[in-house]
Amino acid sequence: MKCKKCSGKLEVHRQCRRVRMRCTACGQEYQIHEVASELDRETEEILERYTAIIYD
Ligand SMILES: [Zn+2]
Image: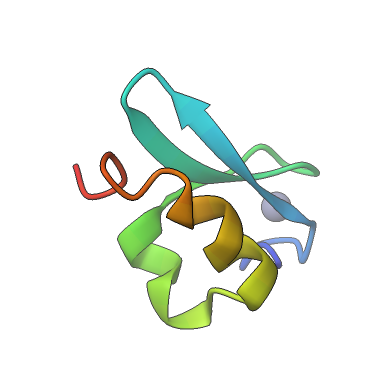
């Protein structure tokens, strides 16, 4: 997953009961639904652990 702004690497970032994608380079955060169509397999597997809480 790459950041739309800077092409930095996005990481799954858990905040309390919410999960976001956050850029490790510029700090931009994305809601899961914003990047849902672009999720790669690695990211999907991480998100599957949070299935119950990602759709806030
Ligand atoms: Zn970025």
